[in-house]
Structures are given as structure tokens and as C-alpha cells.
Length: 247
Image (cartoon, rainbow, N blue to C red; front, side):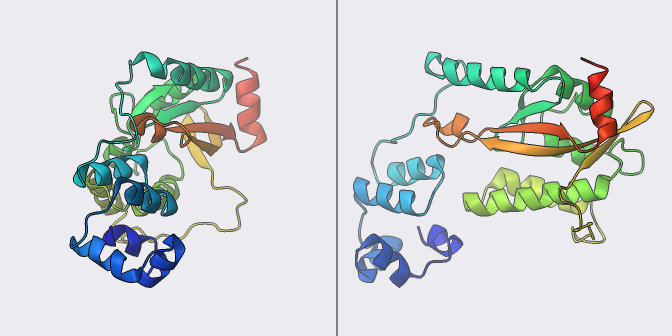
């Protein structure tokens, strides 16, 4: 609880005022001198916008049953959600769309995204960050490799911060950051761009994309609520024309 409070930049007094409880009680909860009620854990978790997985973990640690489900992907109750995801990425054709879990494993991809992943040499990798780590910037088909990897690194660090830490993401972040050495991940990028585009050298043309990312935060299941649907759109007319020919 202390780590989460500090991560969200609240003092004990500020959090106590927001939750309408005493700062002494906050202190006792953080040191273990008092055990939180189920309602208190849910109240704190909701106020601090904690991930569902963390709220479940807090409940379990305090001796309560988790409030959010963590079903298998094949569970019957999740079929409507996966049907909607499948429809979303299918409707995005001919442009690429991929579905990632919290750790950046590729869960689903439409045909256009599968082709790009194959052309980039990423098809054999389950994890998108690991694919980038294994990619040699000197021979990569990502034209603006350093700029794109830096953008991913910033996204990773932001996600780690929001989660309050994640061993798996921190491992990926450290390995990806090392790929940008000796600059230690600090590289110049063109801040005059309206959007940051990723450019792929595929066959005899360069395709340029920007992404819109949809979160599934309203889903009550822990695992699926962590999924991200990344929809890639053409950044220039050349890329638009390329896909017009594919329709």
C-alpha cells in the first residue's frame, strides 16, 4: 500500500483526507498494525486506480476472496469479448491490427499485421519486445529503428509506472534499453511531428504507420482487462495507396 501511495504521489495526510479517514489509520494499515477491511481495500484500490490484478492481490493478502475473475481465455463467459476483438481487428483490414497482453505477447493479429510481422522477421517471436531486442538496427526493416524503439521504451516505462512495478516488464525494459546504448535510451526525436510514425521497408517501398491503442479496462476479468488492441493507420498517402491496391 505504501508503494502504491508513493507511486501515485500522495502523502499519508493527502490520502487520508481524500478517503475521509485518519492519517493515523493509513499509517497503521501501511505498517501492518491494522488489518484493512474488504471495503477499505476496494475503496483505496478504486481511488488510486489500481489494476484489477493488484486489487485482487491486496484482497488475497488480507484474507479475502478476489473480487475480479481470472478466467482461461477459452472460457465461455469471455466469448462475447473475443468475438468483439475479432470483429474489431477484422474490420480494420486492410490495415494492420494486433492484440497484446500486459507483457506484450501477441495474442491475436489480423492478416495484414501477420504479413508485416513475417516480413520483419518477427513471426517466430511470441513477444513483440523480444522481437525488437533481437532485431539488428543495422539490418532492420524498421527504417527509423532507434526512434521507434525509444517510443516503445517510453511506453514500457509508463506502463510499469502505472502498474506500480512488474518484474516481467522491468526485465523487458532493461533489455530493450540496453539496445539503445551508449545513449542509455536518451535519443533525439523529432518533436515537430504531429504523430510519431513507424516506417517499414517492405519489398520496394516504405510503409509508414501511426497507432491508436484501445484498452479493455471496462472488462471485469483480470487477464482480458489488461489486453491492448493496437490499430495501425497510414501516416502518408504512399501507404494509403499501397493498401488501396490490396483491396
